[in-house]
Length: 136
Image 1 (cartoon, rainbow, N blue to C red):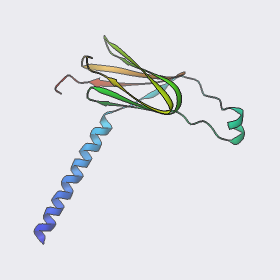
Image 2: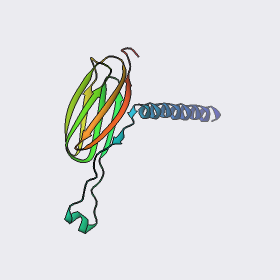
Image 3: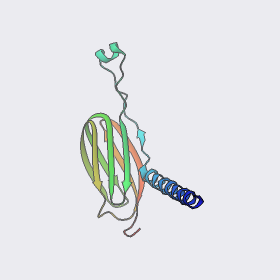
Image 4: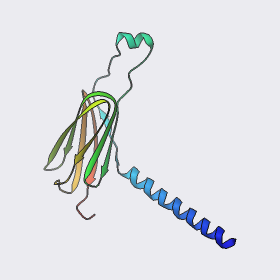
């Protein structure tokens, strides 16, 4: 009985440790984006009479090895994505209908510090990330 409880306790501790490591690695892959400039959107006459304000767009970006994953919610229109490095630029376009998802391939880009700029209409979201060299 004591042996069974000891094994159960050991398995529980190992599982908790692996879950913690996995959650931390996912958070570290997130690119912190900040909103620059832009104009505030005015609500239409119908939405202002109903007291409903349009939802702010939610933009998220994640760096996973050789791709950047971009998620856009509460927006309709085109999203321009630019990856800007010391000597290289990569551009992509995502069409968003309330919710959109896109992936930018980073293969072929050199290792280093990069800036990501996501433009939704007149609003610009920027962040920075590092691309590691191959094998790291």
